[in-house]
Each structure stands twice: as C-alpha cells, then as structure tokens.
Length: 165
Image 1: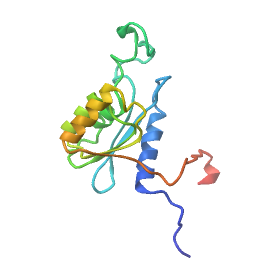
Image 2: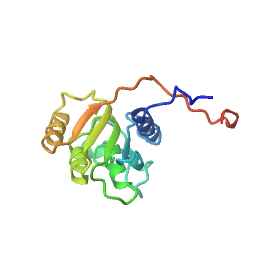
Image 3: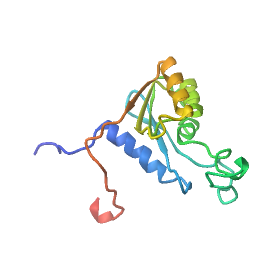
Image 4: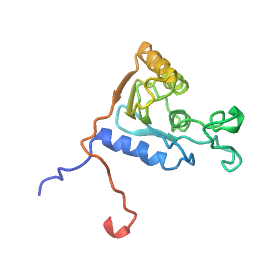
C-alpha cells in the first residue's frame, strides 16, 4: 500500500488553523485568526480577534460605527497581536505568521518587534486603506516578506462525528 496522496500542504494546514482560531471570535462583523509557526513547522502561537483576557465581552460594544468609545475599536485585540501574546514562551525570531486578513499597522509593529520574518495572508481586502499601506511599508522596510497563500483546495470540512475518525 502506498501513502495517501490527497493530504493538505503546510500552508493549507497552518492557514486552516488560523481560520479555525477565527471561529473563537465573538465579533459579529469580522472574525480573524492567526497562527505562528517556527522554522520546524511547529505551531508556537495562535490567536483571534477579541477582547483582552479579563474583559467580559458582554460588557463591551461590538459596533463598527458611532462614538469611538461606543465601538469595538478601542477594546479589541487583533488576531496577530493575540497570537504573539499567546505564544508558548519562546523567541519568535525567524517565525512566520499565517493570518486570515493582512495585518494592520499596529499588528505589523508587533510582528516586526517580535522578529517574525514572514507574513502569509488569505485576504488583503483593505489594501487601499492608509492603515494597510503603512503596514506594508513598515513590513517591507523591516525585511519581513509577505505573500498571499495559494491553496490548492477551496475548503476543508471538519466533522465532530466520532464515527468518522
């Protein structure tokens, strides 16, 4: 018998972990996940967009518009920052980060400071926004490579039916 041929690539696997992490987000509008991987293809951090630990997400707003303090923006930690903060306690220099959405300027600062050397993203839908233009400029000047993931598959179905294991 020969080995199975239809297994997923490393990029598909780690982006899948990022997308699965996004399912933990309570944000009703945008769910983003991120996964940090070291040079040996070991996951060393994961995160999703949400409130900081200790802040009850039922007591804070989730609105996208209105008075700044009545929106989610001053309170939510982005997936990339959470993945960095949630890392397993190791130096992240030389790691790569998989993220569903191209990182904003604030997350890019953290990515650069953490020593992450590659950003792999699924969507860059806000590319024309100044925040993301600034992000790309900083990542480029810091020598962090960025690439859009190119999966060979469209989706993965997960089943929690124990008969499928």
